[in-house]
Amino acid sequence: MRLLMLLTGIFFLLYFSLEPYMDMFERPAIAIPEDIIFVNNSGCFLSARQSPARYSPAGEPINLLRCRKPQLMSARTRKGANFLVPKAMLENLQCTYWVLAAKDFQSNKVLLEGHFSLKRGANADIPIGEGQQIVRVKCKNQTNDTIYHDVHFFLPPPLRKLKPNETEKLSVMVLGIDSISQMHFVRSFPQLNGFLENVHTKFFGYSRVGQDARANLMPFLSGFSSDEAESQTEAWLWERFRAQGYGTAYGEDSAEVLFTTRNEKKQFPSEPTEFYLPPVLLEMHSHSRYSLDLREMIYCTAGRQFQEVLRDFIAKLVPHMRQRPFFSFFWESQGVQEYYEFATQLDQPYMMLLKSLQEADILNNTILFLMSDHGLRAGDYRSSFQGMEEESQPLLLAIYPDWLKVKYPQAMENFERNSHSLVTPYDLHQTLRDITCLDQLQNSQIEQRNKTLQSHLPENLPRGISLFLPIPEYRTCELAHIPSLFCFCRKHTEIPLDDGLVLRCSRFLVKSINQLTKPHSQCAELKLHSVVMAYFMDFGEESFDHELRLRVMTLPGHGEFEATVRVSDALKLTSSISRVNPYQAQSHCVSDPRIKVLCFCT
View 1 (cartoon, rainbow, N blue to C red):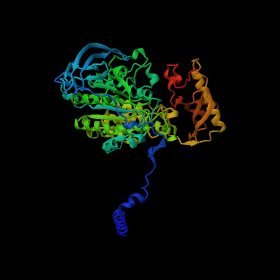
View 2: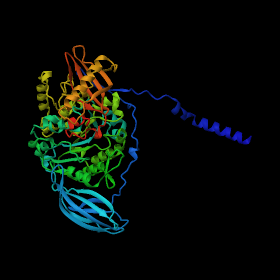
View 3: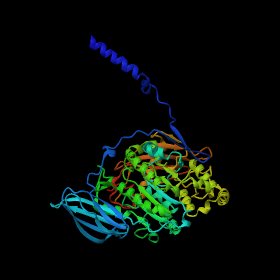
View 4: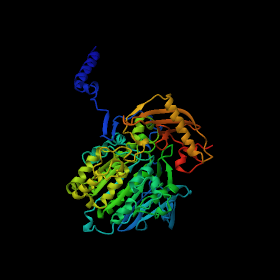
């Protein structure tokens, strides 16, 4: 009886002491508007949903995976001399090192080979040389097992102080993360998003213009589409900045360089920028790489992910960026391309990176673009309509010092107003060209350039418009040179998959694929297996044309393809054909990337 009374008393005590907090669990959540308006003007309406579409996560705990090999050494430069700094060893090791340099885009050359020993316990630092160096190290134990294999790089200290006339120049830094849409960024980077609140301009209407990273970055870096760039000899952005006295740097977390071209007249030296990371990643990819995940999409070297090597490169460049104006371009792609949930793993590293740039006073003289090329292009999330929509809404935001708004008020007013305009990589290219000559941003210049822009008829509107000028509200996807497949300005209405017009257009799409692969006899002729998705795209009452956005599945191979087909007097493809599911080894028999996504090898 006494025990029952005691338990009853405890129950009432807990109930009434917790009663004020029960509402936290019982009250319905405050309603948050699901739709966010990105662009709302006469030429385009874009919106997005805050909550993500349903998707199946990866089959392994991606965010918990860590590189499993030891990181036995680090690279340091002291008073101009380069050293390998070993940790305490658990056993005696015999090591060989190779000092390397880039030979061309595909290979490195050995400049020097050396040897050293490491004893169990503490060891002295190993001198390597001086200046900008790439060093690969391989260490074995007494039973000839490889215990350590890694690639290190060294950057020299800055050689000169900032000249007075260079203080007026604005540095440019591009931090790119592959496959991040506007809303994917909001959901996956809460810390970084909070850190950046009220210190940036986000361009909600930023749209992709091509299928992949290369097709979206070529217009940004060159001002031309990826196909046009093959026949052009115009200077790249880093060449334009270098001509104005800027230091230049380029880094990726992949050995595959984004901007290579088949045009012999537009070939680059082995290191096109002053500081150039790809040869380091190439050496890692060829010798010390191993996979972190089961699908072999995320790479490690010793105890570091490739993405950590990229961020180490940025950190080592900071002393140089403090001394003189810089154009720097960095791009990260591993993990985020394949796994929706991987992006959350980058939130804290990027917040810490931006904090370090802020503390080093880099951001006081730099305009920084945090951007992506497109949203997720494959996987379960991409299969939804929302995923398809977000694929064409890549992240773009800019961080810049306050003095820009004081010195160039009209230009920066236009820049911020364009946050809800329809913009593209072509516009971003023109924006950065303006930064090479800041006099272009004076009020008088902006007024004159705006008059010239306003004098254009819509059909003669320039493809690329600087974001320091007002983007016309009447701008449509067509005027912005955004292909129909990537345009979501028009209303989409889902239509039955067995509709006669849908089936007719789907068969036409498959026929178009076969016409493209026909010259390649090793590619099978594809048959329509099913229509996966079909949407009517509204052109408005003034148009007599109809356009369908289709996703079809074909046999053999169960390939899924998307395209837009216009229905008028005849059927016509109005976009390239996009492959939306993995093809892996299905197209091993062809090397042309444009055919590889379409071909099923017989």
